[in-house]
Amino acid sequence: MLRWTVIFLVVAIIAGILGFGGIAAGAAGIAKILFFVFLVLFVISLISGRIRS
Image (cartoon, rainbow, N blue to C red; front, side):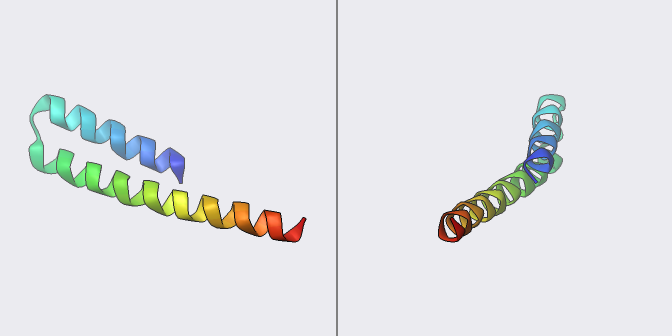
């Protein structure tokens, strides 16, 4: 999931450089959402790993 976040971030940066503001904003929004979902899942996996040990 972090890989997809980086891909959308790179797309947003390239689109921003080339002047495609709408596409850049959309890709940045998707990257932000994916990053927060990744963080939540990562924290849940850390907590569940601590509970099992």
